[in-house]
Length: 458
Image 1 (cartoon, rainbow, N blue to C red):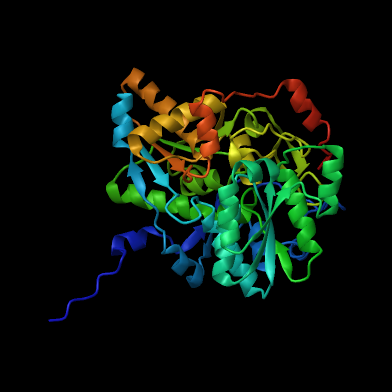
Image 2 (image 1 turned 60 degrees about the horizontal axis):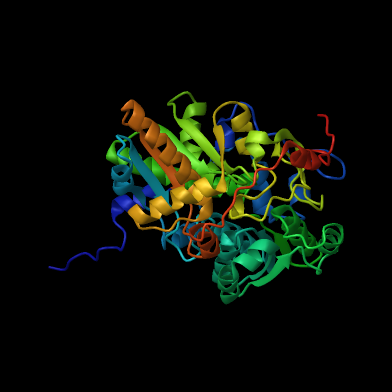
């Protein structure tokens, strides 16, 4: 009797991987404020956005009423290479802390790009290919997004041009080489290739750059190159939509084992990982079906939520992108060249910003040395070297677990482990050598960034 061939993933694992992306904006009573045209200060239309983004992505960006979007079969087939990603209980960390809390993490580092960024990269590359484009341009901070997009573009035979924040380009040469291996062209930003790059270099000689600078260069390159569009790895609503696979899988896995998380913790830079992880849980909060404590963790060196202003601001330093209402430190704010990686962005997703403003999300900022204390502790007991970005969430997860130790409460804590830190060994070296320091901007430092925020009264 012939036996049925067993697939490499079980049926239950396949069922954990969603067939649709969840759009949390559909359940938000207070919708995120619309993107504004930088020239007219009027809400952006699909036609206007389509000059910069792929048309399908522009439609996703502006849709705040459709709760679910079908994941195209070709994207879902690609996801099957590494999804569903594992939800792991951190037994050894619990034991080391002596806490009654149950700690879980959703691990997004089990793919070649090394992070959660591939979830949206493959989607954006798919829509670019569907539109018949030649290639795409983008920026990258720590390099995870650039790596993911390079991999996705290679899969769809698309040209990929990456502007990498100069300080990361210099700190992480091997991340750069992975991008080049997948066929991407990588340029340190600010560069001398674009008008905006030359202007920034003139105004800030010797600067290590910022995500805002790199975004400006990538957009300029896209709109001046026929057959190209710009794609972004965080901040935008379309990215949070694609990243909802993280939270949907997490929810499915918890439901399967009959566990309800009390606390959901994610690192927060532009909002992609956090927004994806919390999506179905905050959806339940919005609908009044369940309650969870949700904590966004950001670096003290770039504290957009905890010390920023909730106003309209440009998403980029060169002021060529649409304006978004968000928590921001000002588009001219250039964070210190520390090791917060992809969290060093001046603003926060409009979706996350609105949820924070309405009280559905808490925010906490943490200092760099404390973050790496947690990263090393986690690595030694759980066997994974975490990315610096993820380690911000680990820091707060440990802090909350220790509070449970004091109170005796056995809370269920889950955090997002966005990726691995094997390309961040310069940071770990500085920590191990005892030369890592903390930098917290003063109020005067922040005022310099606030001073350039445009006055938009709507």
